[in-house]
Length: 191
Image 1 (cartoon, rainbow, N blue to C red):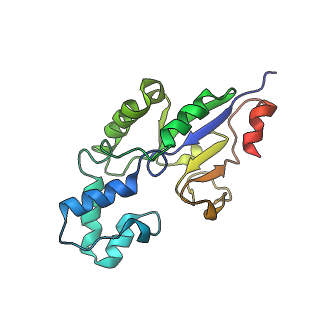
Image 2 (spheres, rainbow, N blue to C red):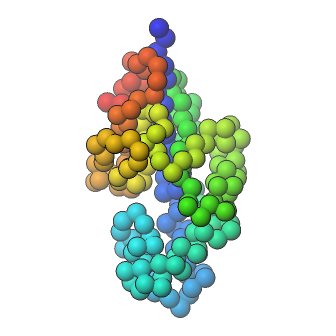
Image 3 (tube, rainbow, N blue to C red):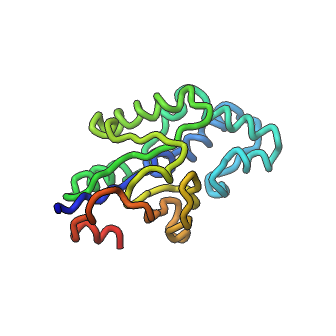
């Protein structure tokens, strides 16, 4: 039986697209007189919670920034991220997918994520977008994600990865993609 490729799932916001810088820029532009959380002081995954801790009404204000039309489409790529995607895509025996979660208020988010990928990575990657609120049900070998804990329908021990590595943790998925074991050269990615 032929070896199957390693399936790599790459998150979009915070890994490919600079969500945090876009959020801060948008918040300061829309609410210049309001207190804000500088990038170096941002803690946790949910900006809404941290802004709400500053002052309760700021939670809705910060959410209005990322729920606004144009927010996702206008995010800047994280330096080096697009090149890394292209390099992984060119690797033999490797399949690369974008696995991203839409907002619950998805009116603008979903379409803009697709347009962002087409604009920055081309139509070949549009065909490889997986949009899901629960990444635990997607079969893959590696998940590159800025969220340190992945929870969902399928329960397994998260987090996997070293928080000292920074925002882009690599989670080894205990539910590997179907098929025979990956070819030994690409299986090294899993070690």
